[in-house]
Image (tube, rainbow, N blue to C red):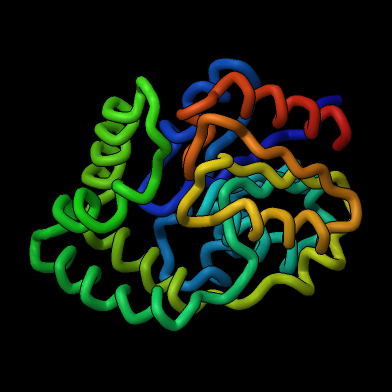
Length: 228
């Protein structure tokens, strides 16, 4: 019997982030929008997930996925961490959060996404404009309240290095070669921490390889799922 796959999307993204993968394999994308701590978001995922499942997350989704593993390691058959970060938030990034939240609350969510977040997401490529448009659509559909809750959760998140050290089931660590938010070195760290992991670096992709290089990303996820 195939292990159910649960995926968690990045900040201000929804299931459309995994649209190409959903066309190729069965999965469930659960929201991480209803709470303002990583702990609470992970607890919500666990209430909605099956008893045992494979878990993947991209960016903020990966951060919540690591907390799911910390809370319920025996329920997670395998872990896929994509373009994410196991460390607590750096002080320089924390300092930018409140001004962004203030702008979003004042009606400036589109400006924050356009000027401060979206330019950091993607590498250059023929589909860059269309993917950026999709990112904006997802963000505006979720709205400023979700932006504020997710910003707080990311700002206050814990370090998960010890969580990864203790997870010995099949793990995939995947990132775009040109990811400027979560660089390859951060994924090498996670690969070193996880006892049973494979590191896959996707060429021609930045922070969103599920959309930038969907076929390569889907292939990597399929190989990982076969091990769970």
